[in-house]
Length: 217
Image (cartoon, rainbow, N blue to C red; front, side, top):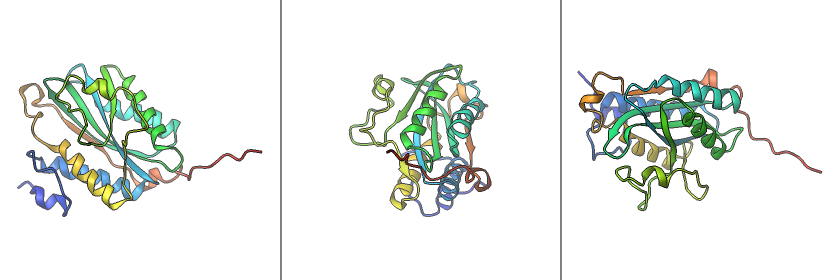
């Protein structure tokens, strides 16, 4: 018998405007909790990709992030990804990305991740989404990808997972990615819609050193 959403939630607040899948929601919580516990100065950010078709190779996301974050920036990371379809965005993939900011600035990591994902075959657009505000442009509008095309430092893109309020808010925000709506359509049936990567302590602590400040003079 499937676990209930309430038992999965562990007391966290989650989005009740949609029908959530308990297995997917459990994966989201697992990624966030392990990122909080195993990454150095962990942050989370939201990236969205427009893709050509539902058969996009989701494993290429991990390949791109391994090269750009783990190898190039020496930054540990995790993620939860969800494939969906909407009238304005077509086939698109939401990425809840978690990463260490011990040795790099958060904007540096986010910019590198977006560039790496945009370069993948079959990806038409890759954007980072600021944390939701009252003035946030809805995904159900034609201006969605234009509005967030460029990463702007005046926007707040990150959740600090070591901050209790921020962590709880990340659970609420990303619970949306476990919803059944927009996933239960004919073109997506039979396709694996979600995928996750959990940061492990023994693989993420080694090179997540504190940021060093160059001495001048």
